[in-house]
Structures are given as C-alpha cells and as structure tokens.
Length: 493
Image (tube, rainbow, N blue to C red; front, top):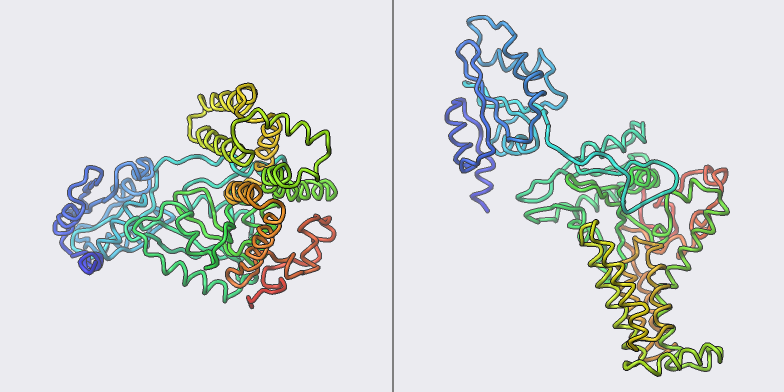
C-alpha cells in the first residue's frame, strides 16, 4: 500500500522522454494508451490520451489546429507555448494543470487530452471527451403519466446539468470527490446551502470518507455506509433516477449523492412515507392524488398480510370465516397433498423464481416466462391437485399488490414469507405480535438525526398535509417544509 502511495506522488520531469517512458512502464504498454507528437519550432509537444475516450473532431479542431496554425517566433521557449495554451486560447471548457503521473492517468482515463511539453515539468489537461454513452431517456423504474420524461443517464456531468437546469439558484452547490482506491470513481454531493443542515453534511462527509473499497461501480455500494446501525429490512436511503424528484428532495434540505457510471442517485435522509409518493401525485388533482396514495398504503399492507392471514384463518381460526367461504377453502385444500402453510410457501417461492427469471432474461424471450408462469401457478397446478384454487387467487392478488410500491419490493418479499410462517405456526396472535415488533423496529430507525417514520411518529401536523393526503398547491405553497423542521429531528442549521 505504501508503494502505491509513493507511485501516486511521483512528479513529472522536465524531460519529455523520461515522462513517456515512465508512463508506458506504469501502464505496462497497454494497447489503448496513445501518444501523438507535434513539433513547434523544434520543441516537442506530446498529446497523451486513451483510445476511445476522446472525440477526434474536438482533438483536431480545438487542440491540434490552433497549435499548428499559430505562428510562434523562432526563439520561442517551452514556457511560451505553455502560456499560449493556458492563457491566450480557450481550447476547451475543462482545463487543469497536472503535476503528478497519477493525475495524468486519471485525466486521460476520464476523456481528457494531456499536453506535455518537452522542458516543462507539468502538463495541461484539456476536456475532449468523446466516449459513447446512453442518451437521456424515460426512467424505467419510475414511470409517470405526466411531467418530465427525462431520466438520469450514466455520465455524471450530464446528470448534474439536468439538476442545475431545474434549480437556477446560486445556493445550489455541487461538491465533487472520488471514491474507490482503484476505480477512482467521480462522485458528487448536491445540496442547497440555505436549506441543508451543516451537521447533516459533516456526518455524510465523515461516512463517505470511511469507504475504503477498491472499486465503486454503483450507488448500491454506498448505501450500507449511509444507513444507520439498527438492523431493519427497510432502507433509510432513497434511490431515484428522476431529476425532478431529486430536485424536490434537495429543496427540502436533503443531500443527494450522484456517482459516475450509474443513472441512480441517492437521497439522504429518507422517510418511510416517501416510498408512497410519486411525481404524478403533484400533477393530478388533490382528491385523486389522495385516493392513489391511500391505495398504495392499502396495497403495501395487502401484499404483506394477505397470504399469512389466509393461512392463519384457515388453520387456526376457521370460525372467523363465512361458512360458504370456509366450505370452498376446505373442499379445495382437501385434495392437495401439502399442508396449507407449506403450499403457500411453495407457490410463493415458485412465483419469486419466475419473477427473477423474467427480469434477467432478454426481453424478446421474457414473455415466455409469463406464459409458463400462468400454466404452472394457474390452471395446471390446480388441475394436478398441487394447490387449491383459493391459493392461486391469493398469490395473484399478492403479486399484483407488490408492484404498486416498487421501491418497497425487497422488504415486502421477505416479510411476506415471514408472515406466512408466523401465521401458519401461531395464528393471528403471532401475526399481531410480529406486526408490533415490525412497527417498533421502523419507529426505532433514526438515521442522520431524522426519525424514519416522521412525520407520522413523532407527529408533525404541518407535515401531514403531504403524507396520507395530498393537499392542494395553494396549501403546499405556504412555506417549504425541510427535514430539520420535523418533530424529533436532531438536525440544526
């Protein structure tokens, strides 16, 4: 490790040949390392770049042509050429002096052209990025009926531009840094200086500074470091690929974290109630937005409790069911070879296998999984006597409900299995106790000084205007509610 740190601190020398020899040695003559030489009054100028990362048109028009067309005096010194590039021309929007070999490699691998002049112990990195990337398209995981169709893409600078375009304020700040000992992935903190808490910023910087991973390829690598210490199925870090959603959270005093190479941004701190909010809620009429939001809460409870409740009632509390329904359940389950709890576990496990297969398969053949699933979980399974028809109905309703709140699918999938087991072994009494434990666990979460279940508990009357119901914009415009204003928050300005 100490040897690597020493290599990172090696400075460029004034001898261009020595610099190029050292670069090729450290890069082990990699095939994509390109050096192009120019001669200006017998002074050698080398353009160092990585193949495929640089736009040839930008390289020719903004760098090579101005250098070759300029008439330098015969007694021109290397410093004069350096000053001409740095001060008398604007060859690129991004320009930076580099002094270390490690800086040269980082800039070249980020799409910059590094100009090194014989006789000068430093170089100039000019932005000439030309690598291919996915264009801006509609977000795939957060579909909406109205509003913007723009979603984040992989290059971080394009994503930052989409945020800046929506908040034209001098209070919006981008704070750049790097993550990953080997990958040196560009990252950025985004916040509004007049809305964010300094205590929140210090804590986030401290946690990110503790990340010692060799490679950071996705924001999912960062989530465990930003979450609290309490053991829970729920995540206290939000994820979005929509610029408008990110902007709304920043205005509420949150901090966003963006990473180069991924279209997903992190939001901290994040509240449980925000899983049930979407951008469409603020585009529709208040009464309809409230109806949709209540529907999401109901679907969340439905997908967690329905299978376990069905197993518990049919096994331990048949007297709670209507006689006609109880007769149908008994006649259907009488012909199946497995106990009710085991049947529920098997059929839900098969459903999860098919969902995962459909997710990973190429799209042209992904529909085949749906056809097979309909046969396996549907009529064929009932006809073969493996499961009862009521269980098929329960699985179908549960599966549909689980997709209403996609951000909570991971905890919902696990909780569904837990409540099936608890309901099959202990009945309604065990499910009641398990629900109380789950509720206490959610209320216990307090990451980065903000209660996870706020503003429901601790109760904040003003913030409740946008939780179960969505008030009209005439009400919402009366002051922006920031996270440090929530009851129970330990954040201060």
